Image 1 (cartoon, rainbow, N blue to C red):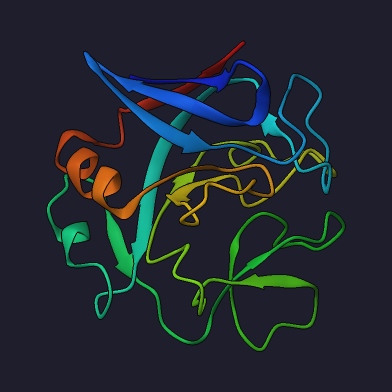
Image 2: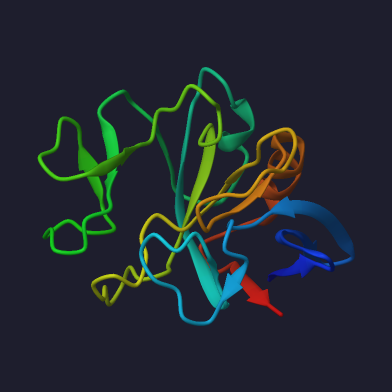
Length: 171
């Protein structure tokens, strides 16, 4: 289990605990919320299992050292973020007709990107999409609702993770 909590005095930054190890992390610009909604920028309060992941093989070699199912990010991989679309909160092939997030990013945030099971198994319109565990910006600026760590931290954690790992966001 990975436990995530906000940093006192800064709701969009936090600490991620993995056993006896503690790492700095970025959280959503909306802090932690029990009432997560699409576009609110909040990190959802609760437990989310890590389902699988994506990686850029040309930028992040550490993704192969895990028990998680990891797929390479190609130029045509997107993630649908339109609540009324049949592929809401699912990977899509770009070009795609509805609004989507591009997974192959210049800013390196998704060079290693793990999919959390927030609003996946039983999708509810408007409850939020693309809640990932991914790489943070160098200054740990807020995410759109995800949990983000440094590439070094991700590389250190990946060998310990499996599809049974739970990310528990607490207050």
